[in-house]
Amino acid sequence: RAVNSLGEVMDGEWYVNRHGTRRMTMEELKRGPGDANPPASGALQVLVVKTFGSNPGLLVADSKSQLYLLRFDPFGYEGLATGAEMVTSRLLYALGYHVPENYIVKFERGQLVANPEGQAVSSSGRPRALVATDIDLFLRRLPVGPGQTYRAVATRLPEGRGALLGPFQIWGTRRDDPNDTVPHEHRRDLRGLFVFEAWVNNANARAVGTQDILTTVGGVSRIRHYLIDFTRSLGSGVQSGPKLAWEGNEPILPKFGTIGENIKSMGITAPSWMKAKYPGLREVGAFEANTFNPEVWTTNHSIAPFANRLPDDTYWAAKQVMAFTDEDLRAIVQTGQYSKEAEDWITTALIERRNRIGRTFFAGVLPLDRFRVTANTLEFDDLAVTYGFSSARTYNVDWYGFDNAKNVFLDRAGTGPTIPPSAQALASGAYVAARVSADNPDMRLE
Image 1: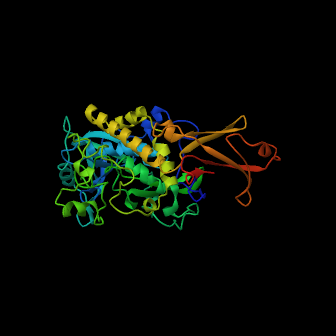
Image 2: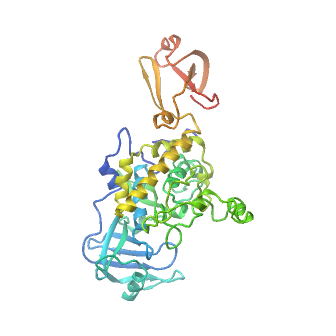
Image 3: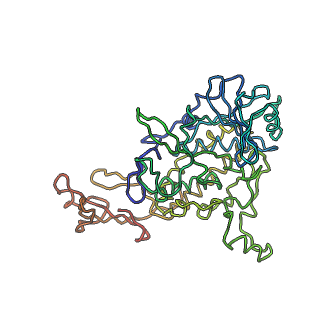
């Protein structure tokens, strides 16, 4: 179970720590939420063609009647959006979030068959009967690969379409879910999500990128909360192509901040992100690490949990980001099926962004972890030192009696890393507490 910064246990189907006491294997990282259910070979029955709106795509059924949402790359940018979906969904799955199964698929026009009961969605959002021409007009906007094939990311949908309950709110709780007990704006897994979204540059993160799904766990119906649609993460943008320079650096409705200062100074004053250098690779788009500042990164739209984040939330998240090795990240990036040049660039950028996240958010707290007692001596790891962000430092340890029922410290029992004799002599079931500080006495752990 996850616990938020208020000390509350977060029940329900929100967050599952997939690491547990072991690291995920390389194959588990690459597999993500599943790799056993790709669309079956052969014809795909097209049920819905959605050409307009923010998420154009095709809803199809394979020969096993399994439903998939097909989403595509912008014209001229094959691999940009579909690769971003594959990579980001697997990173977030490894971080513990529920995400749908995604597969890269390639097919020819002849494999798409208009279902007799299919629908086309007009620009006004109204459905009408589907005809083959609707499919042709949709495909005309897409890049075509070798052999006149189309590349898409296929997102597997639940067996029953009635299981899709729509997005969840990013504040309050869901009234029809008895397990949803912690207000969303105060959940650590949503406040800390800021760090993960910054890592993958998912500046378009907001409520419409979520989905509540009714599922059965152990014979009991539960509402499971998913994060969805990462086609605009990494270097892929809101528009039909790469991100614009301001995405991730300024909100859509900014205060009179850096953009205003730049206008006022007629371009003499410009933030570093305006001078970012990108590789010119269409699969990569506008994704880099040299100007990335985790502290000031922002989503396009204001999100209540992100605005409420505290240093312990960002530390919790940064600790998980730093757990990914360079090899882990390359293996996950490879699932995007990029060219070697794009794979190298994205992997290198994720590694540097990871390190900047650790360096930034470990500095906001005393980043001690992995506490243990060996031969009556309290031991722990300083993650800032472990990862090379800080030199070795001296720690002060003060021991106190502790009233567990009232959650209060009692008389001071001693100092130093070794549990004092008076504490060791306490009766079985008694509690003692250690208060650890380092260079900054106001930055401590208890």
